[in-house]
Image (cartoon, rainbow, N blue to C red; front, side, top):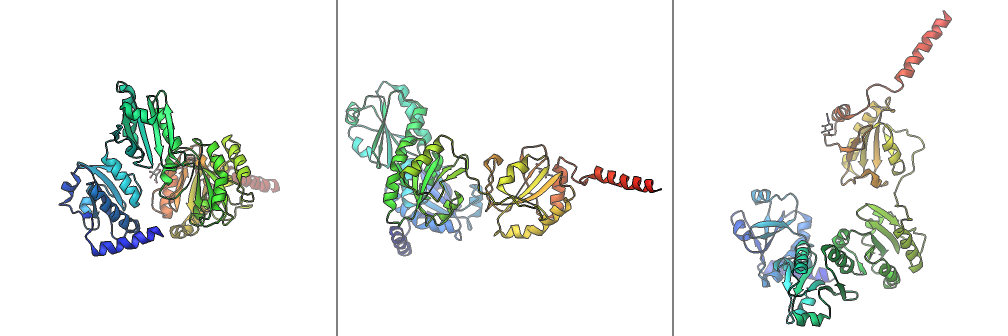
Length: 489
Ligand SMILES: *[C@@H]1O[C@H](CO)[C@@H](O)[C@H](O)[C@H]1NC(C)=O
């Protein structure tokens, strides 16, 4: 509700008042980008994500104007030379410029995210903290890391500064050598304190401080114990490098808080090893589906290992409560749960022109000593439908060489590609080839004509795919017939 109010207000504001976002051209761009710190959006008027960003971008520009951080945009349908010289190949592209030097923008596309990201960029990676600004600095962001170090301890200071340089986008960093501030923090230097606006509010790292201990400490404590996840904070969890456990529950479920609260002790027990979140199952049902959960049995629970691309849904006939989730997560942590691989049933007979490959058979088929060409498709995809007759003809062409080559199709909406394959597919159709005896997948990038597929296979197949199966047996058969005749003679 708040968002839509903001949207309409900003809509009115932009119609009536001048915008704080500067429109740049090829001529005005160089001087603008040469300033100390600026943010520039490269956009196209027809692009939906650009339209969604616009009100947030306007609002952020107005806020950041007070901090003297100028914000601009470039219409790439007009300034195409400028955009191509800046290497823009998608919309919107956001870049931070420092004295003309571009860097990728790493924040969200929401007002708050843009403001907080750019404010951090404006600060030195580490701010000096003294007794005077101590209280203010501690609350300057959602997560603030302050190192309390003796004046003489230059080694720890350097470690902390190097770490801050690397993670300046993720946290706000301060360093204090002021005895009064150290006393106020009530720590024995060297120490690092994380101040945060959620959960316990404060965590301490004392003793020897290294970049490893800092990273572990920051990751473990900077994520709320059990927050709601949405596109705004998803990146934090994806980058955390540890599994992510989801409670899928409708946001408007009157029991939501109770359900989530019941799982908190489990989250606490596994803190730093597994992150826990809840997610609106009404809004993100597709995400549930991608974790192999079925609609609409809510609440539901699943763990995702983002790095390994594996998923572990809890059996949906079970109740999502403390006892069930706690034992499931324990089993997961002990490696006792196999990842879920969605698969169609293995066809009892292969009676289509091409081999119908399903997830359950994937590894077996890959291990066969045959050249293998697979189309990963989605039933709704138009290009896939268009390819079908060609693909079928290709299958038929090699139907008498089945011991040497498999031409297959894989419905990627009903089957997961096992993680052993080592790739995911991003668009449909995706065509991949694996030569017999090789373990390497090659992407087919050619055009989708029969001739090109055949040419590709002939050049890249290991086996002699043009000689039919059982050639020897057929020859033997012939000689038997001949000898039969001979017998008759
Ligand atoms: C054989 O495969 C390579 C990729 O490894 C590809 O670049 C090449 O075009 C293929 N050959 C033909 C004739 O298609």
